[in-house]
Image (cartoon, rainbow, N blue to C red):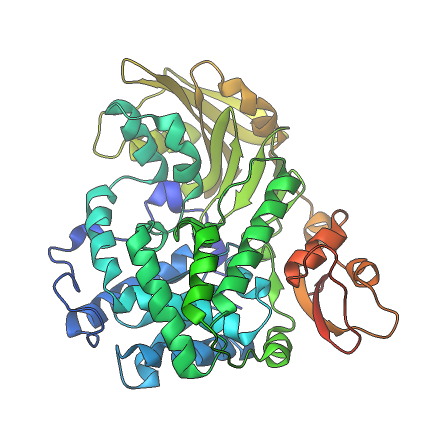
Length: 493
């Protein structure tokens, strides 16, 4: 488990500008390096510099036998790329994040979230995703993404949205992607179709060299698509692309392409080994980062809770809680607090403004919410064609700690979040103690077991069978096999 201090870092995205400092670079390592060439000194230095920032942004590095296993597989695949001849030349990190994501950066740094690992069903799938990411680095695709990141880095997440309004772009059209995207830009920018195809080709070749079944990339993509469709259904939202696949476009087309690249080749999948090694891995939200239960977010360490409005759903990233709906978007985060809520809110608006024209509320009003001192302000932003309201609602939890929502809606509609603003409350120690993490438990199907009997053991009040099928890559109509291992999700400290 990561150090508990990461639970504090997660609330600093909007307020503190916790983002990758790419703008400080004057040259782009890898921009003039031939694809497939060994890691250069400049690339190694860049990866080393960015590594701690990625850890902070994605919940920290996990430790223990599960992390060691992921590191072992990642290094075995990465060495097939020719970027470096020694396995120890690669830093492979299992991130404590509930997002489905994986990425790699120059210098031999490879990352994957535990949530994406939870969704996998064999070692070959793990190797496939990590090999694909290494393929992007081997082909020097990151150099082009860094150039874009340098141009767009300086503003915060919502600051980029607000600047879009000021400079004439459609802010509300970009809102979902920008508000939810709290990860460093280098890890979340999309690749081009050509780059994606090239990384697939390289990833499949690495799998073949390492002796894995090269068809594994196709099956993990199918699982990602099924998981995303289920989440969209449960949250009552439109189907959108999974977090990892969103930076790796056209997953449906890629499945067929990967199968074509695999040809008739086969290899090991190591299903039982994989399932045994990930047994007990955290699933979903880490209580140290807060958890979403239905429409309510609870943070047991900070002793707070709030409820999203009807028609909205939440995403618990490692830097902020995002609240999304058709009529607006919001985030909960925090900033340094010196005991004055009016100054605190003014500082939030100032940081949202970035280097652009200052965004200021007409007034900052004091109030009280469920016994908590609170204050709020609303500013209207316009580019002459489009008006939006930016609301900041802050709460004092102690003389040194405050939290705040930043919400963006069409002009005149900020009231859609009033119920959420009024729902913020301090929770009791007893309520905090009831927040228990979910974990993967690997079980062996016994004679007489069915999908229904195993799914009934899932630690969810709804959609148990659907969740079980997606988690285990079981298509509709598929059955369990006695003696075979399967994943269920339980609650356990």
